[in-house]
Length: 422
Image (cartoon, rainbow, N blue to C red; front, side, top):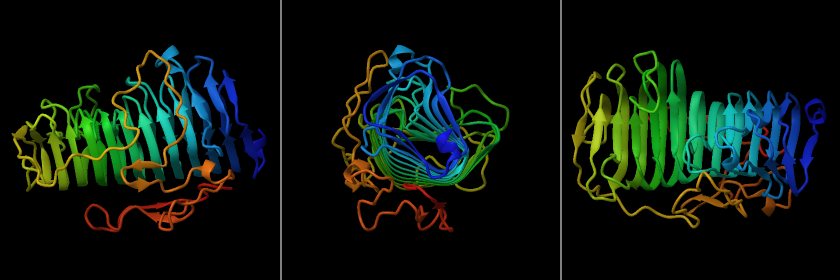
């Protein structure tokens, strides 16, 4: 209770190895920090979350040596133990410089709240479903400079979500990033993904639903590089992995894909697939400088009930349902062999064996681009991060995600409060 009741206090876990068998919820409190320099290993199989931060205001969780974090040994109780960390309806907060290894279930869940920042994280999960990296909902959040290995969500938007910026993400043998699963009453708008690098795994980006209602609007997905994924740019509103829900479908509108270069590793799954609900056609779908190909040299682009521009199978005009259209493209003139990153994995980590703990958090998460903020270990400790370059965004600044939104409007603006220090 010391940190939640005493403003300005710090909960400190010194460097070292610790076991944890009783989970904790830290509720309320303002202007407090959780400095986690030690590495905590799960030793119980109770469900829930090892740590829940709830209703905090002006809160920071970090590792000053950039080596602190969690070991879940999930292979011992796969999909039957706790998740690591959940941030619930908190405001003006940050989580950074942590290592998360093999949670029995999800690694980090952000549930609602506002003005959050997640950065300089390394997440290693198993090559199995239910190993989500980051699932995030809420308003005015910024997720950047994160590496995820698993076989489920990399960094995924959940409903409700508004004004969220996700950038400099390394999905390294991961399920890939996504929106969803989208259900009844979906409410998502003003989202930007920028500089997303996907090495292997399921997809570069996916919108997934089956029935449902509500909307996803004003989304910009720019500067994507993907290598040897199963799917590429993928909308599927008849996603067979979820049971059909009540409703005519989630309405997707004003979605822009810009500056993509990547390939898929097969010819059964299209590099570009826009499969929209016949009863809720997608509108305003724009592909601009999207260069997606197949390593087999025999790709197919596929559309259903999708309206917009930029790919041969999409339609223009008044939206209405239409049957699947397949086109066989020629290799895009702008396509080139995708870039690589030092540390790219050739495969994920087996679900039935111990996953090695990384020795360090990377300092770059997208080819040729340094992280926005230096690791805490490079700054001599303390609780305030500094940018890598003079042009990087300060953690406490007002940040504009793009100069213009997908249709040239005012853009997505994310505001960050006391992120990165107390």
